[in-house]
Length: 170
Image (tube, rainbow, N blue to C red; front, top):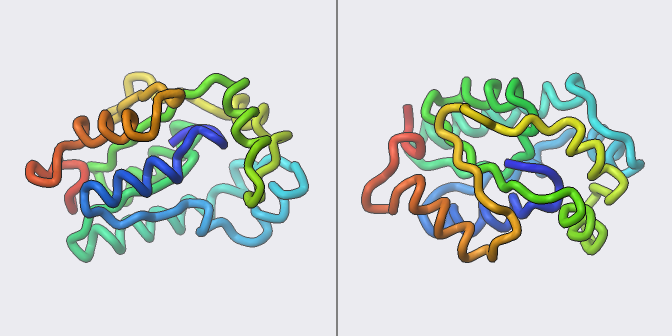
């Protein structure tokens, strides 16, 4: 979880591959109206995100219900968004990719094939509620290399042999 440009998709893809999990790419679940709104540089509201979060929760439940481990790439910027996702399984953990705003802006400006424009980075930071003292949450320096971040996240959630509780069906 984290703001645009923090590396959510890359980290989730590598983590899912490393632990044998099922990748859920949060951006793929946005309704077209949300994508169009963001592409026009208009920040999403809580109302815009509500249905999207419901769809993500349903997808987590579906994956976990099949006995598989879900790895979700999702901004989950506010605590209430994370709490909504936690309703899918009480053992859901979050890896917060903490990134300075200047670095997020630089990264988003360099992306060529994403609907989220750099003009929305500031609104993402305005919305962000850092997951301080929330259960099953790890904060990682998002400026580290992908390998380092995935290594830290994998160690935190447990190796594929130890099957950390929060990656298992509830």
